[in-house]
Image: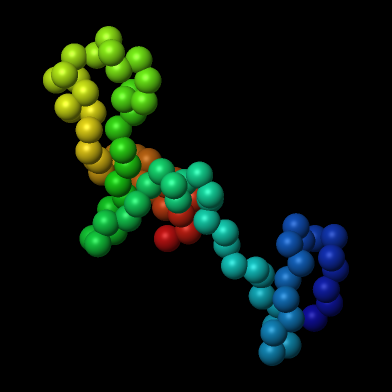
Length: 84
């Protein structure tokens, strides 16, 4: 097996006469924003509560509290970022 360094972005490691690529890294901002439930769903916090909250009603702010499960259309993309 011939190794040419120009083909790789990360240099592979030789282990037991096999080249293995380095482990995937978790996306740093994604791990701060999302968490995985016990059943494997991805949770996120709701937006629009960080600033300009004085103009929002109590009901709006109450409904923006708490977390929600990520939509199924975004699930695969976020799983890739979190390396699940």
